[in-house]
Image 1 (cartoon, helix red, strand yellow):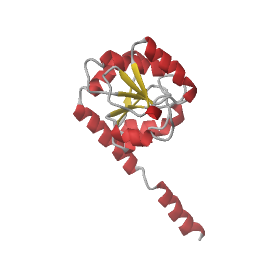
Image 2 (cartoon, rainbow, N blue to C red):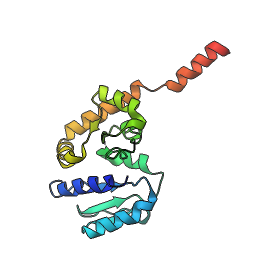
Image 3 (tube, one colour):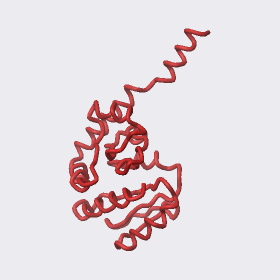
Image 4 (cartoon, rainbow, N blue to C red):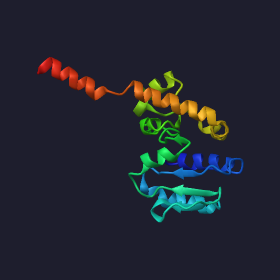
Length: 180
């Protein structure tokens, strides 16, 4: 969302020289912010490659910008860590289940009222990382530097998904046993 895309970008690029093999992909929630982001990156000498033009390997000052919808699940599969936005600003957050399904270390901000029940369940299993705006570089550095930690968060996140699956079967069985 507005401003958090800039904050997370700045934090990533402050670390990009320390982690030259990491790549940054951002998928703005609202396509009308694409031009604003492109201008921000140009002003900061950051190369941008749009999904619609085809992603090609770039140097560590390249942003891969999602300018089309419907591809996030495939891209989650390729990620090492995922920040789910709408949560560094008081927008209520977005769903963390998809990246968790792909066993990714999932990070969000402190504003998650739209998904509070899900977040609480993930936190109960230490399967989610809560970032604070003023600590973004340090928190990202901790995740980027530790493969084992990322894998542990991803495994725990998937376990939460696995333990909470089967809801439709339970509803169907209840309906069949009670009303049919």
